Length: 173
Image 1: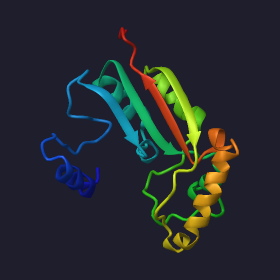
Image 2: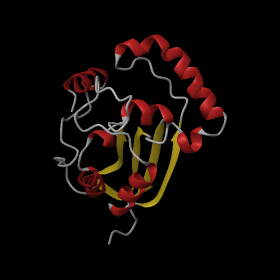
Image 3: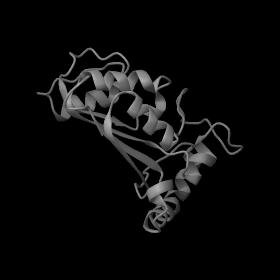
């Protein structure tokens, strides 16, 4: 719901209809989209089930859901971004932000009605800046280590991010 991001989108594609809306209550007709993308969004939403149900509602039969969110199984996410960690720092963290457990997210996507649900954890997606700011001094080293994490094969399961996807059934029940 970032007005800054919305302004940037409107500047880049002024002929497109851009709206600001709550993911749990979209002002869109049912079955009106082919793709719903949650790009680093679901981990900010306290009621993910409502957001996923709303995505299901606005997607046409065969429509694609895509989600990309932090993975609590990645060591850095577990240590620095999860509130239960002794190393947690709330600077730069939104009120409801939590890294997600892949199995929980997968179950929530399936419960919303999506089929052919699949996931893959992914590392080697470099950060340009993080909060707290003092960590930016070591960000280059972190990005290199995260690349090695991915290349080792561990990123497939314990990557920084969970990439999830699924489809609305062709025949809606």
